[in-house]
Length: 246
Length: 382
Image 1 (cartoon, each protein chain N blue to C red):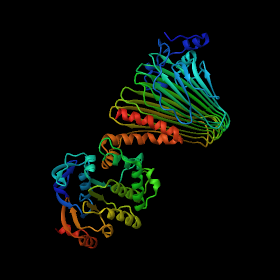
Image 2 (image 1 turned 90 degrees about the horizontal axis):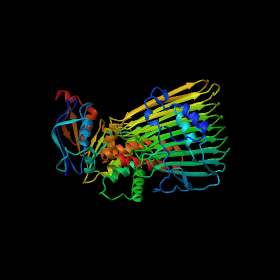
Image 3 (image 1 turned 30 degrees about the horizontal axis):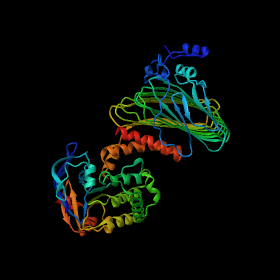
Image 4 (image 1 turned 180 degrees about the vertical axis):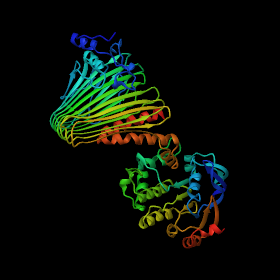
């Protein structure tokens, strides 16, 4: 059971971004990707989620052994991929609760409806865990939310949708230290032998709270170095200069 | 030949006027030929149809074409002739036709705290139906009115509706119109309102059905501290054109008006919005807003917006604006990334776009009804 990326190549407007990337995230593990700006980290997460701005020119993304190349964005989500966005979109007029109900309903067998009582019970419990005010259920998705509120909302969605592989794209950006701890607590509560995580970040700080099993360094569209949690500490102190001499 | 005109003075007035033509500014971008009703006869006796569920707390009146088949309320009386609407926005011929032809309608004389009236027009037949509605709200009284236009069957009925709303000092009114005609029918709606003193009116329309709609909304705020809210949700698809002209007239100091129209256009749907905020000399302290937003769901739909301002007083706050945008790819991707299919995602975004207007009703009952009409339209087009 893993999310496996094999020799992935992708470009945008004919400019290559990913240049033969290989990565395997077994269920039960947390992998972190670090790397300098422009190395393709966020692009990788969007391509796995199925964003059509990018053209996949080679390679494969396998979800538990199944190639997801032909799946639409929503099909990938329902198959178990969750992308926590760096910049979550605002959706005016659609309340958080209705949005989540629609997302959960999309996972139900045809003809079955989600139970409203258990939905709200579950929603409120998870909001409490993330220290989110219940007024956010009736507010439009991300509209007028602060940066931190948006990130908490991403984690709330992740907790509600119960995905198999979670991609966190710079979830720590825009978070103060208290919010970071709450978000990390939410993520950690979801760690399980059946779920894999890919955490994209610039900073070691997030990894103090979400301990990775494996750390990768990405540069120029490829994974160039892989190590344990200590690699993040090393990068924090010495930066990416080693890439220039490599 | 025009339809039968019985009253000689009215017939004279009607005969002197011309049907709308392309060159009249108030018909710019509009399908003026649709307004030429010459030769159209009254639709005759109506038919009964399936009525929507009654709205809790409202007294229901039902018309089948020109016949009132049910409804009674101490503050409501039947009209057997037109109140004589005036069109100041391009359709005097149609107003004269209404004055000559309208033989049915209601007058609501609200004097209490909680008058709530629902009027259903069940229309049928390939001809004219011309209802009248007068809403007069006494000082400090409060009224809520729902008026629904529903086709019975698939006939091409032409409805020419005229409305006159008058609020006295301290009165409050919420008035919701839902237009759910079939796609062969037309609606011409001439809506005038006048707010005296510190009264407060919210007038809203939901346009879901009809092949063609021409709506002229003239709102006068004539008393200090008067507040007029004018709202519209229009959802045209292929074969539908909604042409809305508005005039926000500020005739006194310290008056307020806020117009918000939101159009979601599907298929080859078409909208025209032309609005003017007009501030009289001496109407200082006016606070007036006018916004028309178009959400284009396809590349083939067509929206024309012509916002305008004319200010003849000092110390006023006025803004007007119009935007047209396609559904945001970023929003759709976000919703899809949570497992919602593209079609449902577009529908959710479009629904959210309309909800901003509906939430301004500030009335749960009216909001629920409007949402139901909008939801049914989205289900039918997407």
